[in-house]
Length: 282
Image 1: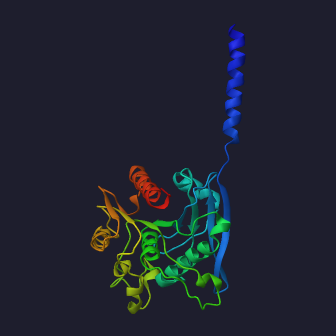
Image 2 (image 1 turned 30 degrees about the horizontal axis):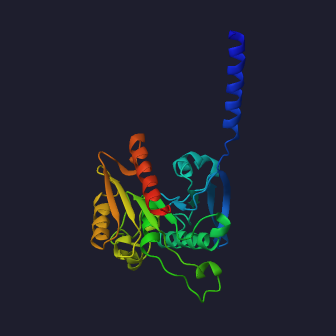
Image 3 (image 1 turned 180 degrees about the vertical axis):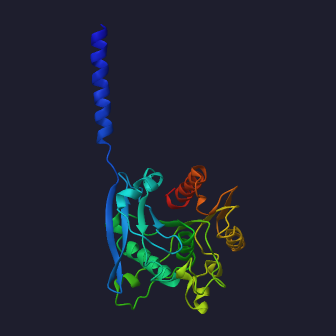
């Protein structure tokens, strides 16, 4: 009897292994070109889950408004919590500091949103169910996308510019929200070296209005680079405007939640839950 049971067990395990092996992996489409400038291509990577839920989430590849390229496969683990819930993820790069400044980066990611909406059917997403998130400069850019949308320029020769911008939900980790007084030569952040009179155009705090998308702010109270007051101020402004918003403080959290996987995990769980709440059809 024992040898027979062992054989049966071996068959069951083999079948189980076969089932696991057949579970499809997310599909990665790297380096999709959404525009050009100065003879250079602007690109994003697409991560499509095995069972898409129809909603898309844009991740801003930006820290200090530096946007770097790396093989798309290397970021797959970062996006697994979203992919496991069926979200299609767009990892968006912009013209990078030091060559390009903050206003350039904001314009680039806005174009990416327009491009995705124009090609939403091709990408398998609902253009009305796009969210955006990022940390620090990426959080700033996500807020700009959410709080400063427009319906597109119907007279533009470029069909991308005829498409609307805007997001349906935003999550921003430790974002700078007011760049007034921050501009000028900077060795640490060359992207801030632009004309001071342009600072208002890239300060999310100045674009808060009642029709803004639901916005989640997450910030550590030990952040010495971007004071927590930035998130507190814009949260208050959004709440006063009647926008669905929440503000989560990470006790002891530093900028980037550096070196603390628990802080990163908490922020990720909150982000995924926010997008589930506001991007999925009820």
